[in-house]
Amino acid sequence: MEKRAKPDMLEGSRLESFQMDAVVIGAGVVGLAIAREMALRGRDVLVVEQGASIGEGISSRNSEVIHAGIYYPPQSLKAQLCVQGRRMLYNYCQRRQIDHRKTGKWIVATHPDQRAELQRLQHQAGRNGVDLALMEAEATRAALPGLKVVGALYSPETGIVDSHGLMLALLADLEAAGGQLVTRASVEAACSRAGEHHLTIGGAAPCRVTARTVVNAAGLGAIPLARQWQGLQPSAVPQQWLARGVYFAYSGRHSFNSLVYPLPEPGGLGVHLTLDLAGQARFGPDVEWITRQDYTVDPQRVSVFARGIQQWWPALDVNRLQPAYAGIRPKLAGPGSGFVDFRIDGPDVHGVPGLVNLFGIESPGLTASLAIAGYVADRL
Image (cartoon, rainbow, N blue to C red; front, side, top):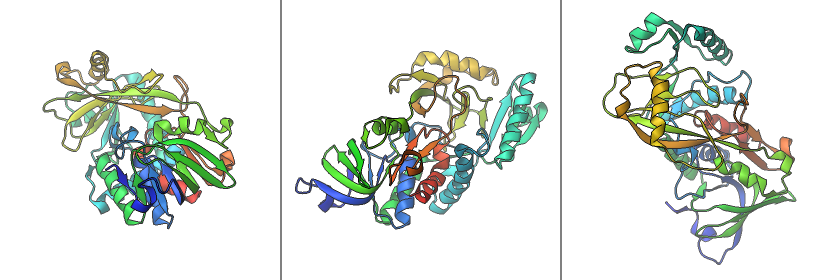
């Protein structure tokens, strides 16, 4: 799938430049959702993706969890778009027959002094419109035999989804509405002037694209691209930090049919147990601050994983933990910074008509993708 564009527009050297109504940069789940929404609203949309296929970045390196909307401060974009997006995503998956499952999720406390944090999370989730059940130790251990816990919160709305199947459905909708995707097409330069945006596209069919509207949904590349964008003030572009999280698969059979999370930790949600749609368990991600994109999984980190997991599951068989994969979160603040919201910057923020930059779109970006798409389209 190297190209999905009209042959008379991009193929060959006879047309070195062309005009588009709207361009979305990045074919991850958020970029595809935005492009689909814009196409459904009647826009002529081109998606350009530097990778060889859709979703090769953040969208293919996560837990594939449909989040309920528990952890985010009320009125934040993450809270609003996660709760709205979760409802939209379940409906979309049912309508388009995308594999998914409401597994439910347990947030467990292992020490009595953590009960107050469970209550705080329950209260915050309630303010976000998310109902959680506060469970005592006996009821939790009955539902999760073998766990060492003093209580838990249960989220019935949490689930899992086939993220690649979701992206294929979004792409099919986009193309059915007249939109186009071109892969192996990196944006080498960008300039905004006189109400238009000029993109220099590299790759197999280099060209120049001029568009009235551009959405920068390039994930980890969104901030680096914005930093070299002519016509966009440097003050409108935040600094980016990278937080790598690795996953370990748990081979063989296990007794879990729901997701299990510890209480959150700085930079993430703690090393948790998730399931794929085939029922295989995996643990992660952890948090490791790095200075460049590096997806290496160090097998030696298994000892750190094991210590964390054994705090709530003492029977863990460490020998069954196998390195799986790593993902990188695009953070807008470094270690110890606390909560930082999504940044979806339109002309009201940076003053450039027809341009939207998406910065710091980490978790719950997958869950919120359809809601983010509506949010962006409304502002364009």
